[in-house]
Length: 576
Image 1 (tube, rainbow, N blue to C red):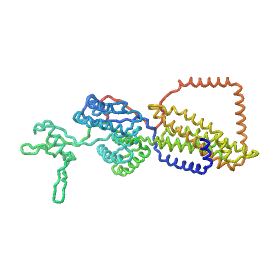
Image 2 (image 1 turned 180 degrees about the vertical axis):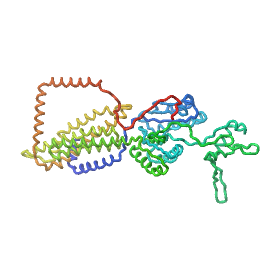
Image 3 (image 1 turned 45 degrees about the vertical axis):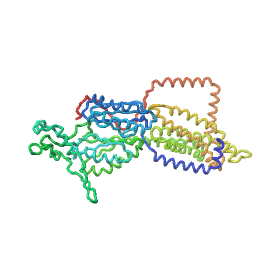
Image 4 (image 1 turned 120 degrees about the vertical axis):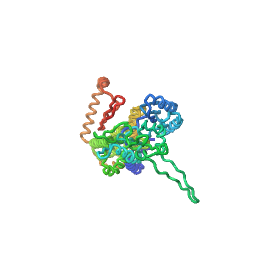
């Protein structure tokens, strides 16, 4: 089979070389459009369910809301664990599913189970809802808004009703959360003495306020040729308008809302605060959708914010960009990896030329690097694997390995061509290249598969470490298998094409001296096999003995350029 493959590659060498060139261009195109991320998607499939329960204490939230939600979720197919957190006025339940679970099917099953809770939760508790499906890295971009001209209430209103809808319209954005500022609300401050004097109850005032701020249809009027809908006007949107609402009739006169209670435009109770560059402001956090391209979505969000810059300036709002921008870490990581790959490839090219002392032979060996790596990138993209620090690390490790197969093949072909040129009856070039390629083919195949087997345990790792490190092993294995395919097809074709008219020349002197030195060392080592083996075992044991003295951690310090500080205060501590 291998003989047939090499023979076809030699006979159809023009086609093979053309396909190799096409692979390079297609690989560059795929790499330019590939999904980029900081890390692989290492979080198990999970769904977060939240239920707002205003006025309930944490113990009441746990007993009346959290436990019913947990009981409804238990028994879902593929569910591994359920975690929950109950705080004042809010229940958060997280359902974690087994690896490989289709997250969309899981959400559908949970939606069906949550629908069964309708009407069973306490009065005033909002229906439990699932949080938007976001990526495992969650944060996409954090930025702030501050102003010395706009009040905190107007700043928060601007963020909620202008900035947030603009960002949610960007493709790939799953959620936009707003923190800080002051949320505007119309407040009704009850006055018990006034209520008693008019014979009103709290419910009477609440019903009147609800009717005044709501929108209701008024039916329609039919004519002979038309049906005309009637639109009501008069929704109370300000404190003054709400104060004029009639609550009841007493002694022939109207009792207005402002007569029975105080009506003001106030601020809702603070739940968190945002300090941006030392000034009170508004913090906005964006999250990307599950499977979205972090870089593309970040650019889309930043483009949308750039469109809002004139509006920021007109209203005296200061836009503080990039408080937390994971895309910067991705850009730096990609840039550093590119430099490492280019430097590694350049060093390999220099070493190849120094030892082969021929540009054509060095080029043939060097071509295997971009071909193998780009073929691996194409396959990674087809399998839905993102280009992240782990996959790029696997490609970087493979740089020095993918060239081995081609070097072995080129060196043997070059040696046989030299011998054939000095032979009394030279054989045809086709036969020499074919025989030389097949001569080392078994060794190349065995060596490639052995190296791949070394990384196979990485693919078999389970849990968090498996999801994190498997892409590294996957990228490495794809690269070296691609290098084997290149050595079986492209390398013989290039050797036949580029070396057919090569003038005979001897090996460089320094290379012959290195080979002679190597032979001398081998002869000495072979005289003392037991001593050499013993020294190797002692060195190995010494290395193992040092392992307990090394520190260990799951991930190194990535130095993303920001710090996260968490303070735990006594319950009820005032934020200001």
